[in-house]
Amino acid sequence: MQNNSLLITPELLRTHNSDSFYIDFLKKYYDEGAHLSQIFSDEFYDLPLEFVHWVYYNLPLTEEDKKDYLTYVNIVDTTGFYSSYYIKNSFMVADSLFCENSEYVLNSSHVSDSSLVYSSEDVSNSNQVVDSRLITSSNYISRSNNVENSSGVLFSEDIFDSSNIAYSSSIYNSNLLVKCSDTFDSFLSRDLEGCSNKLLCLNLKNNNEYMILNEKVSERRFKTLIDIFKKQLGNKIYYVDKIKEGSRSEFASWAAPLRSNLPDILLFNNLFRDNPEVISIIKKNIPDYDKDFLYQLTLSLKAYGG
Image (tube, rainbow, N blue to C red):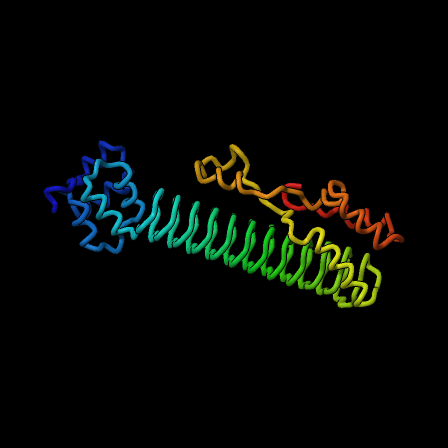
C-alpha cells in the first residue's frame, strides 16, 4: 500500500510552507518521513487534527492517501466538506465536528438534521442558527442558548414554544417579547419579569392577572384579543439575524442560502409603523386605547439590528 502512497518528510513540509509546529511533530516521530497510513495506524495521542487536514489540502496525495484521510476523519456520504471531523450524510460542511444529516454548516459541532448553522453547538432539527447552543426544533435563532420549539429568537436563553423573542430569558408560550424574564402566555410586550397573561404591556413585575395595555381585563376578553392578534401576526417571523452580502467572508458559498431563504424581515421597532394591521386591530378592538401609553410601549421595542 505504501508504494502507492506519498512519503511525507520534514523537507516536503518545508517546501509546501508548512507551519513549523507540523514540521517539528513529524521530525519528532518520523525524521526520515512516513506514509499517511503509517502515521494513522500508529495512533499518536498528540496527532494534531489540524495537521491531518493540512496534509490533505496542501500535499499531492495519492488516491489511496485520500481514502485513508477520509477514513481517519470519519467523513461518510458527504459532499462539499472542509477541515471537518466525523461528518455523515451531509452537504457543505466546513470547520465542524460531529455533524449528521445536515447541510450548510460552518464552524459548528454536534449538529444533526439541521441546515444553515453557523458557529453553534448542539443543534438538532433546526434551521438558520447563528452563534448559539442547545437548539432543538427551532428556526432563525441567533446568539441564544437553550431554545426549543421556537423561532425568531435573538440574544436570549431558556426559550420554549415561543417566537419573536429578544433580549429575554425563561420565556414560555409567548410571542413578540423584548427584555422579559420568567414570563409565559404573553404577547407583544416588553420589560416583564415574573409575569403571565399579558398583551401590549410593559414594566410589570410578578403579576399573573389578565392584562391589556397594563389594565386588568377578564380572562374571556384577554383570550379573545390574543386570538385576534395571533391570527394576524402569530405565524410571522420578525426577528432574523441576516448574514448580509459581503459580511463574514469566510462563509463563502455557505452564505448564499442564508440570504436567499430568509422570510420578509420586519424588525420589532417597525412593527407598528410599518404594519397597519396592528393599529387596525387595536382601533377596532380597543377603541379607547391610550395613545401615549402605546407610544411608550413601542418606543424601545427594538430587536437586534434595529
